[in-house]
Image (cartoon, rainbow, N blue to C red):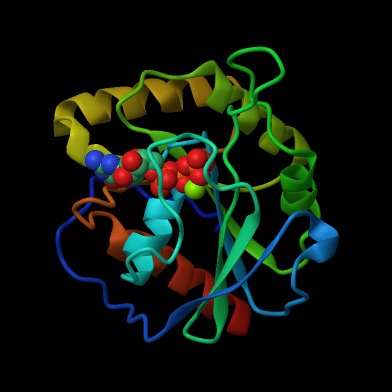
Length: 216
Ligand SMILES: Nc1nc2c(ncn2[C@@H]2O[C@H](COP(=O)(O)OP(=O)(O)OP(=O)(O)O)[C@@H](O)[C@H]2O)c(=O)[nH]1
Ligand SMILES: [Mg+2]
């Protein structure tokens, strides 16, 4: 997961990676309640409403597996989805949705921080960023926290169906430029549209590569 992949917009081909099964394994309100597991785990984090739950459904091709909503803050628990009975996708509650606290701060639950720092079988963290937006302080703050903790991540720019390719690319470039102020290392960068199933192969192949590295 630490390797850098070239930036590319999603293709429209189907993935080589086949998902045979996907099911909700359970939900947890904190790290201590997470199901003990030795299976490799891949987590999605990002601002509320960025499209984390939609991405779980798009990747697994199971409609309504994860709960999607127009209302930010829908996902409140750590949700585990068992895929192919051999690895796990984790849908985390988003940051930036808090009834209390300073507006526009990367307020995220301490149990999410605890999960990201201490879950032993976590093999990859995808940080989702809305491709429609210019660089947002809230995302940069969250990434600064990740970098400060020494946690590797993959950036995934979501909702690319909502704007032109050129406009998305401009936002992505601007974001990556800002990221250089935080991190010397360039992360892998992917794009996705859950509506059009774009980016599915790229995300699954990154997961597949990581799984192969673990086995080797
Ligand atoms: N057009 C478009 N809409 C999307 C896409 N992904 C998500 N959405 C919409 O964005 C809204 C939020 O999606 P969710 O998947 O619930 O977002 P989330 O990040 O899980 O949100 P929280 O659980 O609140 O943190 C829903 O209305 C989705 O239909 C996408 O790729 N394209
Ligand atoms: Mg959600």
